[in-house]
Image 1 (cartoon, helix red, strand yellow):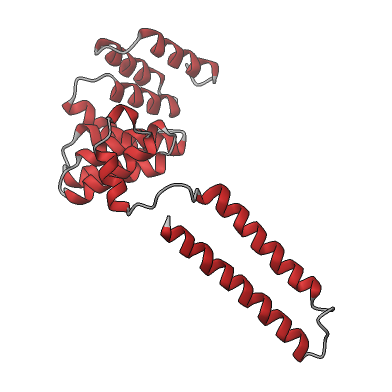
Image 2 (image 1 turned 120 degrees about the horizontal axis):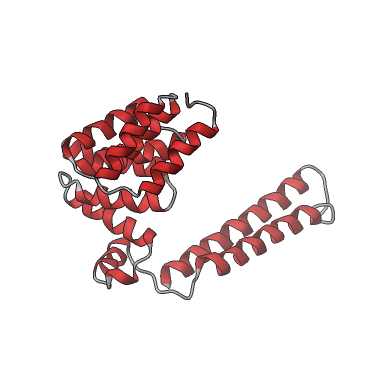
Length: 221
């Protein structure tokens, strides 16, 4: 609370100094104190607006706490009570403390994808991949983030999905490969890749919708 009072006092002094400087400039220019009233009124209005914003946004009723102490408090809270943003703060600090560990970046990437922040998610998955170049989860996450950013399977994302498919039994990379084939109008390839995804556990309805979409767009032969 002490730091908040200091900040408020400094802001008040700065506002008073600005007002005094304005009045002095008016008088040196030959004006009267009456002609300076509009400018002084603006200074007062700015000060009032700043104070209002501080009271609303600054939350002066909360006790001050250094960032380290707040982080430590977050790390000792029940994980089920943390918001996504609080999780990201903790994961960032854990990543700094363990610079070779890909896991904080993987978890952060998943959170950011869920928040529909694919660019930030891509950076986290890329960081995880630099720490573990064989991480299937990092490759899959980076590919998904690229797809979310571009609205299509780019060649770079397709290469990642193909790597995942070669070393994983998950159906997701096959679905994305089918989407890539559909984008290029390769209907037979899309059907084959969809069938492979279904064989690995993907819902058959998903593939039927995909193939139907290709036909509806007029790319089927």
